[in-house]
Image (cartoon, rainbow over all chains, first blue to last red; front, side):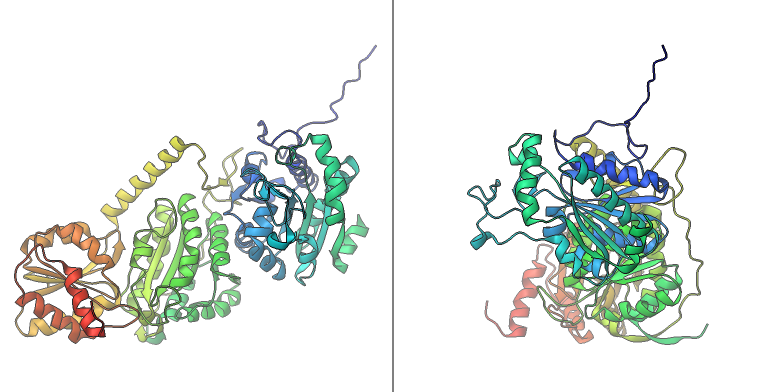
Length: 258
Length: 375
């Protein structure tokens, strides 16, 4: 009897062959994989330059097997601007967490979007500063306990969470601004589609694209990976609804064209 | 080629463009703004990259990105803006990237004012960002010299893969002088193989970071950087000496202060005083050996600056109490008159030969009288 052995799941060719440093159950690996798969499918791996942030994904360049630079905290959109304006034919993206993008780098991200920079931004929202040990981020939910809001985020003294995608969508320079989630298979498939659209927007020179990805941080949340995904669904999505916040008419054409 | 009457900021901008500048990123700040304004027209006109950034932080990080492509890039600013850029300068240094920064220095600290100053000597020469690194810092004393040094800044940046600073002041930036601009150089669009987006040897990729998470690995990097700096100290010192051959006294000053000092030195020469002027052009690397060789035959050395004696500390370490050291400076954006330096020269010559004298203390006591505040 012939044995039918087929490889149905492998490391994307856009990945290096190294062991992950991310915690078990962390969705950074999923987000990385989706980006690598999309670039492979688009045939853009050799034409891409990534910009890594400061935070847990500071070492993103260890996993992606193409040219990469490492930005100062929050400044990835400025660095990407410098690269893209110099090499306009390259695919340039930033990969940033919520401390990096929505706190330290809010000025840079808003300005890059307002200028309509032809870059793609992937924004990982896991409601805390992962790398430094789970401190309060601009995205931390009201009442959420973190190591720097141990009694729960008190909005009276610590302010309110920022809905970053909604904020970015108000900028005329932004062409494609959406929020997706990485908590289950269906959401992950939808996230991949959005990542593909973001890169297509850039490839066709249609402006600034921004994909916020709701992510889990089981270690700092003090949960099992499965419970973390449930928590995301139950608490994060009501605060950060999944949706398309800005899709320019030119981008709609791409999406329809599929 | 004909001389043209051009403002310093514009002359530097146009020269950078002619030297093959591929991208410029900046932010408006007086007294540097004309540099940005000139390039806002000229760069797009020639199909090159220009962005007025959201802040100096944005500008220097755009430069950081552009420098990763290995193609010529620069920014310009003035003191408070350069303070904001220090983070980026440290990252550029830590990633070994070539870039040029023009600092048109103004009076400070804080918001200070928009008048000419040399108060950023320490910030540029001895670092200002975190960690340990050096910049090459060139200090012109005229618009023509700023033009002549501008192309050199890019060559040095690329030769050593480091940041080079053109250290001007509000005077040099705003003053119009007749200058001869260089002809257009070809724009180099071929990137070195270490750059992102460049062609790499088979199977290789470019990863440009300033991270060395392992301390021993970081130390290896630091030793390499220091060794390169040692080489630069040996081969890239630039200075100009005036009337030094038979000099018994010497003034040391750079940039605008050095230029004003030349007037005072000439006046003293007319009175038969054997005095010369050493004007460092590279204030970093400092002309240590040149000064070292001059010290033994000097009866006195006067340091002049438009700050509180920031270079004085460097000169003092070299002089090492072998000859009396004097200092005269104006601060806060006040530009000294040649007469003030002349008086300082006379006081040096008529003063007692005390190698242990406190140059800064003596100057500060005079300054208190001058500005009318008690001790």
